[in-house]
Image 1: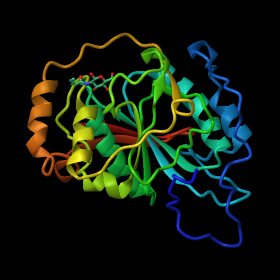
Image 2 (image 1 turned 180 degrees about the horizontal axis):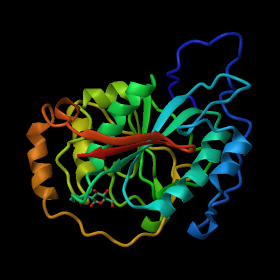
Image 3 (image 1 turned 45 degrees about the vertical axis):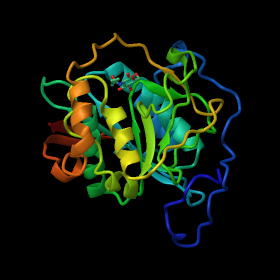
Length: 281
Ligand code: BGN
């Protein structure tokens, strides 16, 4: 917990801070494999926890030490999204976070551009809330341990150290994909993600290099805490272009990213469990 940085400023009014470790964290692991994930109807989640429109929540009895935006790049995974929200809302609530879930859906049929959707999510979120910590999160990854706190550490953090589908081993040391937590200042400092990666693979490796080039480092939590399960999906073919893109990325960081981001928001809505953007990119 000491490694986490509180980015919320001063106490508002006469409430007190939430305790450093939430009393609601549970030691027992309730997710063992993906058959454990039950979809909870949104009406029930809203009623039980008081989730606000747009997928927002914060503790009412104390002021959270951590304010975060969870941004999800998305297209065509309705079932996963329902499972994700059913799991993640109660998980974040047990951690007593002040949070908002934002889903950025890619419009149209061009190849999926995960990295650009995350850049868009970053920019659009900041138009709605003043938040200093971003969690960029794939929809098919679910954290199983309550002590994996969804707040920013000083350094950018790769959130999974162990995933069931990788037999709980990291495939390689510099992996920075799937789920990361990064401070707003650091995301800006590296100029966000490259916008050039269409199709599967490489955008996260490129992002890792961006971090290194700006003399930052990454950290991870202990694999016993940073454990995830991955929801099953058909294997996608990696993009052939990704090696070329990664090579280009060595010199294009300062002009490819947040600095040249162009897109159009086709639609947006505050759904009960998340804020939704439909983006053409
Ligand atoms: C890597 C992918 C990552 C992906 C991880 C885990 C590439 C670039 C060429 C080596 N990188 O191989 O994007 O997150 O696997 O699945 O394909």
